[in-house]
Image (cartoon, rainbow, N blue to C red; front, top):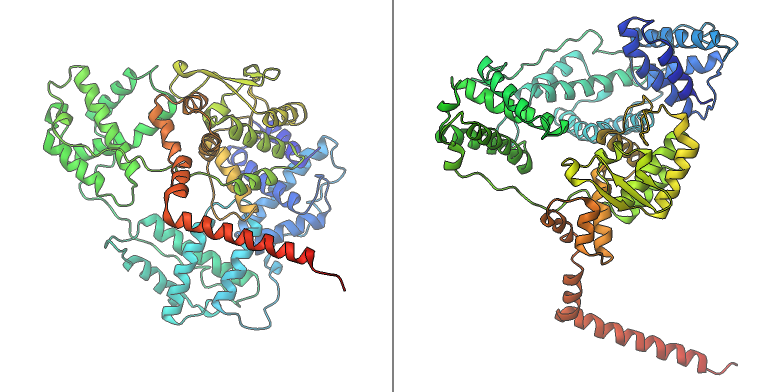
Length: 559
């Protein structure tokens, strides 16, 4: 039995028997331990005490955990192996004979001084082998470039930084201004400083430094407060929001309620800051100021700005329909149109094959991930539709799938075809791997905790595989849908058939994908442009010369 299944049984066995903090911390700790064993090629949970000691050294030197955290990991592993010993899985508890974690894990010092560039490259290389997901990796590289620029500007070396230098870096973050003159947010300052702290701790624990100046260093950054912005919704607007949500029950999906939460709270706080607590007080000038404030948020994309304003307009329309206001002020002002750019998540053929190559493992998770990728690429299903797919929805004989939980509700249920390769992977997953994962009723795909595979889970899995395959771009679960639609259109599928396959309400949504594959425009360009005609003439002349050369070579006499 794999270590993951032993861990799953252990987590199910301790429910209600351990303290709340232990039940909260056990999954993350044991998951990290299982990843470590898998990276070492260990297929069994039975290990020697030396393996536990190497895992603790791995946490100390590469993950740079605090010593108290490492001791907590050791205690948790002791409880885990005590559970396995009671079930007869192991004969002895290997943690008992493992040496205690202390500062002796630190290796001897390096034999020479290293430059900042060499240290940063070594740390990033260690980070890549430690973290199996690229979470924060692009952000890590960007922050390290900024740290390297600051070090070069101040002529400092990472191997000799003092407390005063680190405090100077914190002051630099406080005084830093962006191109638009805005200061860094509290989270950004804290994150950049934390990366420098991790880097210096890594230097000390791997022998690049003789001391760790960040051990007792405490830095407090200033929190930026938005003037006039209320922290909590007023009682009046909280009641209006409750009534609004109550009236939308049965019409909106749970994801819609969650998406409208932040835009509506932002609008209500804007009204509270201007002492407006009655819908009758909302005028066109108030909406214009809010619209201008939203459009001035440069950190938001145009789609995000449109989403915030659309939520406000929907709320005002509800007030008008329910006769809570006589005149809708939203009709008196101009609202920005929705930007309909090109889909930015299209995958190339090489990237698609890279994901398929990465998900070829024989373990249950590898088979599950490959089946999910093949299904989404073949059918163009949304991630939410994949999460709600049930065994009874699959017609293996006819090669069809019934989408019972589509976006938009029951009015958009549909039956669509699925390719034979994807169908074969589904059969393999259901017969070989599904029984080894926690099941949830008759759902096809579940996580290791028995939950449906939501969109963020599929996107996280794709990030893992993109990281392993060293792809320059990371994609989301929606990328498979975009790639499926574009592939069908490139191969001359009728746009009405693609619309039915994707479950689009309007043909305008499907026509967006035709802009990614302008095949007719390409043919017209090749046929009519003068430079293309010149290229064809030169190509024909080159082929004629090659034919004459080959003919002369074959006709030449043999001496």
